[in-house]
Image (tube, rainbow, N blue to C red; front, side):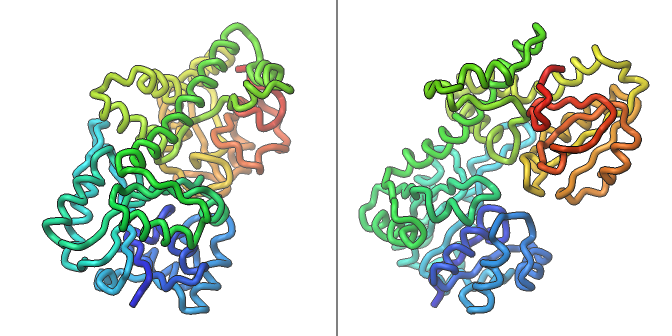
Length: 393
């Protein structure tokens, strides 16, 4: 008998969670349909960058507390099934709440009464209740809870053990069982209804996105009148707690923030004016930088180099990175655009040495530490102020 099977257990959310459970002594299996991921993880290799995860992977493989498979039959052997399938956004930028139900439907032949099924990824409000209703008919006696992941990518192996875990269930027995599971990781459990947990997850991501939008709007306002926004931010925050959480300017990207803002907007019947404004600001920053750059140089005869293509520093994940949006804009407006990243695997990228040798202007798309002290002889657009030379463009 297995303690936990994580469905989607080879991805950025599922694999660290599975490793964490296994490292705390639970017999854990990751189920993933990606054969390459299964092979790599079985060989002790992380398929993506995650600080501290590879030593844990080696340890739990050696102790036979963890394995990964593409065989769905393991699901029937588990006491708890954690489903890491979120709500995607379609080509019309609308959430598809049926995606989670469809994923659960595929699991029905392997599910059985008395199991605990945990939804872990972000879901559209109301989806947990739909899953409960569906499984009440298909697998009577199974328990369902929504326990959202709360980690920042790259810090999973720390935050899984330190952050409070939210358990969304209005059934006391289910809440107690899910709470006991996650107490293996964290001593702090917060019990809510499913809907409260769903909104807690969405509100958290959208709150971050809106804060980033405010900072980016402030940046544009200051920059338009020739003022360095980062100097303003440092001045207003110095020894002033009420402003200490104002973020710096930069690309607000990744697989969650925009998607979850779109979900919340759809949930509010597209009356989420604040969210729509935030999307306009954050998604508009790459074009704003290009327009400012056009005031500095003749882009039609300029080669622009983009330093960093992942969505955040220190990671190899390019999903929803605004550096790619910047690249697309520059491909149309500039003579040439060269892109590089020390971590991202993409055959369209070129070595840093070539970018530095051939570019007339550089833009820091992702503030990797590798770019902080680069010796360069051309202008650098650094909205992050990674290099400490100011953010004016």
